[in-house]
Length: 583
Image (cartoon, rainbow, N blue to C red; front, side, top):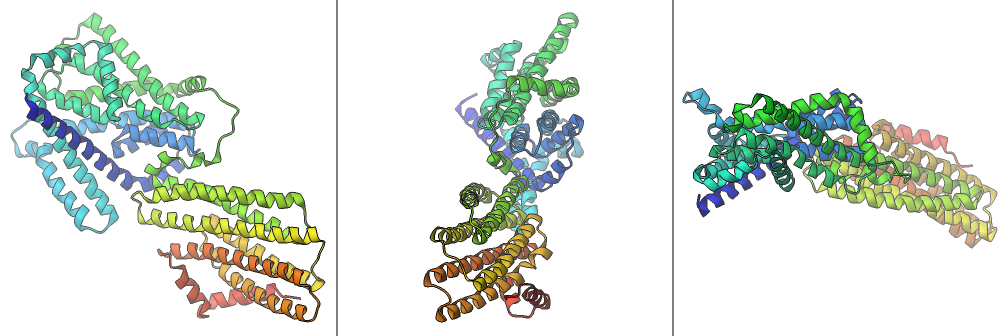
């Protein structure tokens, strides 16, 4: 084996890892939109969790990715620790699918059917189809399928390249001696664990072992401990991802580690105990790619069969390792970066926080309006505190959504990200106007000045309209109900009409000496705040309506309504005019 074989080996490894990444990303994007629905139906049954973990990992071809995803779900409250245990066990079995796919390259036979089953025969066909779908088709779903096919073809080509590059090693005695060292169970487990921890993928490390089996120097005695170690090494990814998470998320990563360590100890103890009695002859025989896939699958199935009934014991063991602490959990833990691999779930977490933000905004504007009639220092402080909290909400949710939007999203997910980004900006501005209203009320209280009876009655009418338009916009945002959203714009127009009318009445009172300049400024500031709150409510509702129709052209929607051609809008507007009559 010369320097060029070494370069070919590393080139093949690079292609193998790259192909696995491309294929995994394509599979995640194709399956991601359905994952949220699957999780919503999840129960606490470990067996159902096992089936889910098996299915998801078989699709995305990475137990590490599934486990990291589960850590994120537990950290953000989407899933409980008990639910996560079953999924982790299923993920360990699901990851063996990759080894079976890679073992196809070892198929022997001269018939046309057997030749076509070899990856070297059908991979070029898949690559051509993948290129066509990825480069020349506009559908995002078909592009994802193209990426999957391309990734698979590159992965198999990398596997063939590695196998060809290492084949000369069969004639190198030093290599054979090194491999024989791994017949020692402890050294074999350590070697497998370290390799997998470095490349962060048990599927990839098993693939490398399968490629090395082409040398004929890898025996069952060497391969079995290495495969056990590879299962332990894959836990490194989840352990690293759990840093900085809450206690249950850390426990999830620990469960993954315990599962593989206990399985390895029990499996090796039983295996070598039986070997001391039965003296297995096959231990000195060379393994092939198919044999490695069989060992990998048997280990994970047996470990799962052993530990699945004891999921509760694993949970208690993890809880004993990472004990409860009295510290309260941060509600922004919902915004877990690990969830970004499944955008629908990540977006749903953002929506939950945005709903809390909307409710705080509605509460703030309601409290601010109550201060006009009766000022209360505690309520004023609550309005200011709510505005500060809402600023934090906008910053945290907005930053997360911007980061999420940089990923490859489906059209529906992209529209939902746009809706949330625009809406949280409107809710933040509403809270600012709530503080403005509260400041006007405080000024009146501090200066001991009051509106006239007429002005007070007028403010009550427009305040009621503002409360309702705010409530309608929040409800439509929470539910996504367009029938509620369609009630917002007519009421917003009524608020504009009331503001215009009240402004003219205010000018008349000033001219007649019935109002002071000082009160006039406060009255005008209140009217401006009311109008701007209703404008932001209009933006929120219009966004919901337009996104339901697959666009975000709110200006066109509002222009169409204001043209008077929408009879439903006109009827609703007139109904609101009758409801909010000025004295």
